[in-house]
Image 1 (tube, rainbow, N blue to C red):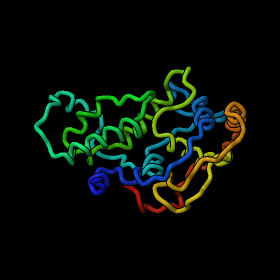
Image 2: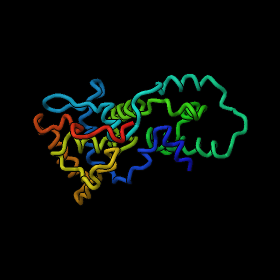
Image 3: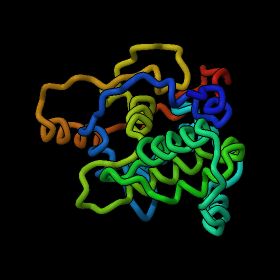
Length: 229
């Protein structure tokens, strides 16, 4: 299904990822330590913030290019009606709307936001967007959602792998496929028979007691540039 075009658009690495088990206890524990005003995870000794390098290394999305919002504003001013187009282009647009709206920028519920329509007005321009930067902003927005929510929406492997790399002492990541890129392809989540409540309580205790010296601040020192967008 037009794989070459999807590669050029910068989505090839994400689409090659193996299926990863969700780790709701980990994402809830991290979310409980997120400060909306500081836009950071608050620990007893300071704060930690996922970065654009994390996005690039973990997901393979490009973090440079034209701003996502700029094209959104421009596209919103155009009429969405268009001349009849090739079925292949129509199928590609349908796929991208689902891919963007239900995977990379997923929100709660099953709806796909119509703001992705103008973004896909010119398929040849999709390759120029800084999807990784938009993705990170969406992650921050999801983490800062209502306190009544107990988990995050969006592309869950990113936050899980971020914790596996920087906070290995939590003991949650299983390195199954060393050496693959992007880095998310290497990891899976553990199978834990304990209740979600027990897992969450234990993880919150571990995070609160996590030593500054045990944080892996530079997990990519031995990584080359291969596979980077």
